[in-house]
Amino acid sequence: MLDINLIRNNLKIVEENLKKRHDLEKIAWLKDLVKKDKEWRSLKQEIDNLRQKRNQISAEIKNAQNVGKDVKKLIADAKNIPAEIKKKEASMGKLADKVNYYLMRLPNILHDSVPFGKDDADNKVIETYGEAEKPKFPLKHHGQLAAELDIADFERAVKISGNGFFYLKGELALLDLALQQYAISILVKKGFTLIQPPFLMRRKPYEGVTSLDDFENVMYKIEGDDLYLIATSEHPMAAMYQNEILDEKDLPIKYAGLSTCFRKEIGKHGLDERGFFRVHQFNKIEQFVFCKPEDSWKFFEEIAKNSATLLKGLGIPYEKVNVCTGDIGIIAAKKYDFNGWSSREGKFIELMSCSNCTNYQARRLGIKFRKKNGEKEVIHTLNNTMVATTRMLRVIIENFQTKKGSIKVPKVLQPYMLKIKEIKPKKKK
Image (cartoon, rainbow, N blue to C red; front, side, top):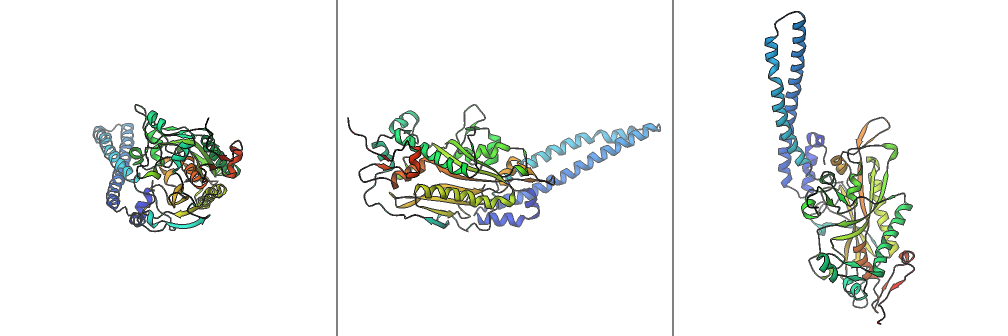
């Protein structure tokens, strides 16, 4: 959420930000927001004046009574003031609701280093790693090979749960756990605290952490309850300190979130969108940081580096992308994507997203910190996927697939895999 004072004092900044984001229809919102905010402030002043008048008349009545004067007129003057205040407060409440409606939907102010562009075609590659080579033999689709090796079952999952679900079996279930353990080991050594959050959230805190459009497009609602299945552990971690004031000495707070995630999205466009890439349920390790405003850009680069460390350790070629103004969501001020090499498709596919949300999330959630001098300031929040296991399973199956139909296990994962070095076709009985 934007600070209302920014709109009152620097409206041009907000207008230019909407133009950068190609979100021109919200410029009309700004005009109505400014109008209603002025009306709200005018009513507030009128109410303050009425309360002052009421207090003044009360004092006059008391003084008049003390000297035996007639107070009927004064009482008559005071009688209508409470009803007048109540009426104006009702109008003020309606204006505040509309102003808040706009504030919750206006996007965060972009950092100056975000490249201008309309969609993902305008994103800028700023770093690459590894040799993005096409395979020397025809690769099998990751889902097909997993089924053939009897380490995944899609058909029975569809029978039980519908499209977008799967059973992981044997070595592939171990590999999923190994990815989580490897990611956790990197982060814990970097000072992150492992946290397993609730997998369900109420709507009110959820509104503080994500775009309101996600409630219809992404999240699963529990019928009959004010609860939603989490789309990522970022969300319950962000809301953890809702309406709290943290101490400066306790910052930064760095969490490694461990959770299963639930999303409505599912791949529908071609063979390689199926399998493990876009699914309704997956495991993820998420980085999340609460910090002072002056430190947030330092931590933005730090959490991005952690993802790069994991990809390099696994031996996955990747590109790091600075996401452009037209492709970035409303919550982030700047965002990096890490795209891993799909050797089967011969292109990079999104694996991780790293965002600095500055004070946007925290303002929605009411999270501040108290400085040493006693002043309070809105905190900054950052998040980054360390590993979404299903997407990583896909690129591992593709990049470590052998001609004989096996999957080599990346060396860094072998200690977490009961020392299994290769997932081989099972011998026929």
